[in-house]
Amino acid sequence: MTMSHPQSYEILLVPQFTDAKGAEASGTGRTIRSAVVEATGATGESGYPRYAGEGMVADIDPATHTVEAILIDGSELDYGLTARISEKPVGEKSVPENHAPEKNTDG
Image (cartoon, rainbow, N blue to C red; front, side, top):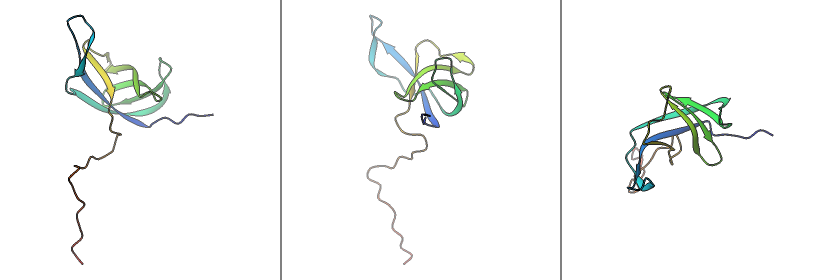
């Protein structure tokens, strides 16, 4: 039986803040870099499907949408940064809530 995995994800790199005791603080900073990664068809060293694109190579758990391993431009993730999956599916266009569809007035 073959599992179906998403063909792409958007990965967000954001600063991870800690409190004075070193514990993760609530909230994160703004996204400092993002990339859309596509499935490569390979399995990464972590055992999860591998995705690559825009300078990022990541192993992503499709069940939890968690980045399990990542390289940025060939290097490990810098200390103080965290990689997250965008909550908005790749390719989804956002429309403002108060935006009404345009009506055809050509008759």
